[in-house]
Image (cartoon, rainbow, N blue to C red; front, side, top):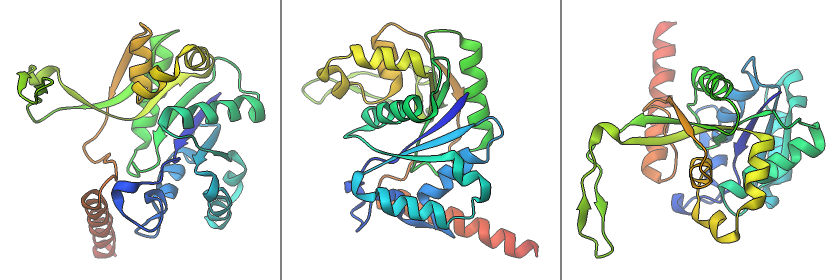
Length: 246
């Protein structure tokens, strides 16, 4: 079984919008729907579980009902998100086990809801990589850094300039097996859960390997108004190209 886990539990305070950023409109639909659609349309994904803030559960359910998902709507489940990314993934995991009876070897492909331009290729590569990696491993999507990365010391001064060719920037999807993730998360202390902000950090801290698949610079994360403007421009340009082709 393969399950898409869409992390949409945040409120998006840095955006400064009147609604959480995942519910902002991007072209013809909400940002969240772009991400959900990519997963529910993928031929290898059996179900999609979306974690959203508690107060937005009813709104999101109605949003999905109104979307043009057809028979695919029944494969989309909702659950209450957590205080951070990993807690939301944990709640999605529990939903998968309790409502779908997901076996321990279920592949969980996690993705930030506010990365609306994820492609079928990235999802496929994550699934193929976790199968190839074997037990105990995780997979993350990443891109090589085109900028020099600086490591700063406690005093704010540069302490190291790592070799740029070895620096990659993490994206999502990130992929695990449900049984291994559950076992790892339950053993983590509260301090560890707050310190490790994503799956990669959790697996590395526990001594497990994390493999990469290459992402895309277009797989941007909408965090700030500038990011949103860039996403709007991209959608607008794509729409213009479509109209020009008519």
